[in-house]
Image 1: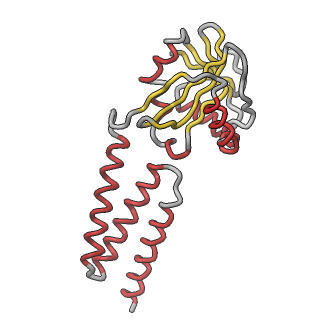
Image 2 (image 1 turned 90 degrees about the vertical axis):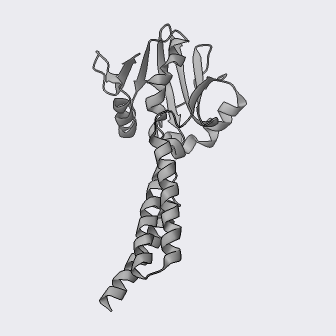
Image 3 (image 1 turned 180 degrees about the vertical axis):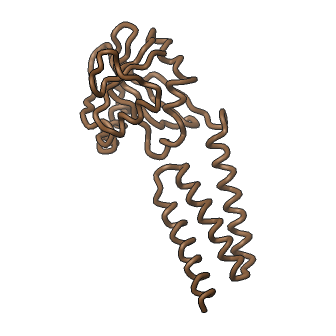
Length: 210
């Protein structure tokens, strides 16, 4: 009876993991949880001697491994960036739709206006995945918004943009970026992207030299 109860608990746990994976907004986290769920379900199927459950979850685990390998393999995902007019209806609608989520990271953001505004759309496999908006003064871009959709925050878009993709800034004559962290989450993100506190030592004021 104890073994049977333990097996049932394992089955319920596997179900809970799979259900939880479906609530993930991040593609990577969804795949990781789904993989864990498939392994747990395989173990459950093995204990109750159910070949269909074992075969199905081996297949699911293999599919998740394939997608996760693609996610983390350099060059396997097509990341890109394109200029877009700051007054583009698409851009304004994109920002308006995601205003609440943007406020989680940069609550003070307000769409800048003027001829010095630079707006970029970040793409993943050809689809819009985020935006970067700032105003340029000479060779310096002050970043007003650096936002990536929740589904793609584990896709290393920021690492790519400030690394291999940083040529987009140089094409505009930009050699350094400045940003102000207004939340702890944003502060940690800027540190992770390689931004350093300014020489002035103002709290939350960061600079990245390209």
